[in-house]
Length: 228
Image (cartoon, rainbow, N blue to C red; front, side):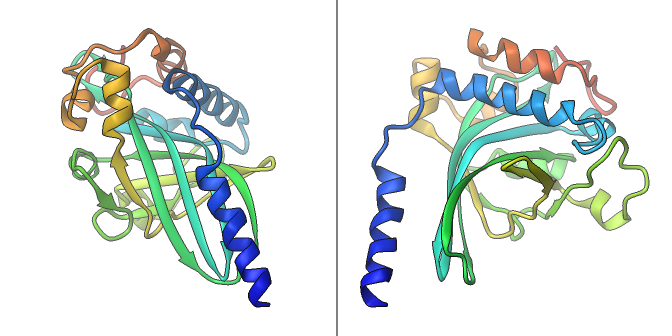
């Protein structure tokens, strides 16, 4: 048993550290692809009216998960917010978290989350915050419309979804931490920029984000200025 636990620890560590991360440009484009595929599942995807109400949208392609008694999650992705003149430039972010339980195995999951109000958006501007502690997060409803969902769900600051092996559902992400990836943002924008400057629309977006904007612009805002 001791050797088995050591082997699992070795494999888990290798998964986190062994492979070089995808380029930021590829990650931005993968985020657009994930969003397109999830929204394309009309009866099982994210309700369109929620996307129209969302202040910010985040996508974490290929969130890695592994576990042996104590589970772990780690992933990189992008977040964009509605700004005065449309969608902001994408901020490169990382999500990290753990959970306790019998979770033997490893895999990858696509994650999409939406920040639904100004309170949640303000939390997103911080250097780091914990989902569920600093900002309320719930698994979002699935289907064409969110009208029949509970008031508690609709009051959540963040709604989250996951897709793994073709199975799509709302997911809590309780206890995970979300933070800007300063090094990746520096690589994308050529200088040190803050998460707040990026998400408030003060930074020029890269050309790689055009496909992501194309997906998001299908859902014009019901809350703020017209999307780009």
